[in-house]
Length: 66
Image (cartoon, rainbow, N blue to C red):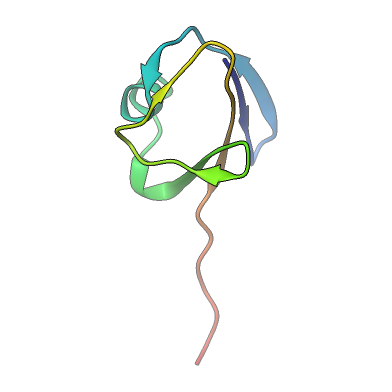
């Protein structure tokens, strides 16, 4: 699968099938700190990703003032 990472931008090829949880563990990424997107859909940690998937991993950004 193609995995696009943001901040810094880079692209990796990762063999599937692989669950989101296992993909993030393999990449040493904290699940709570990112959004995982397949196509136009957010995916949860139990979703199994396939070789032909294109995945984007974006950092969660929070902040602002009340």
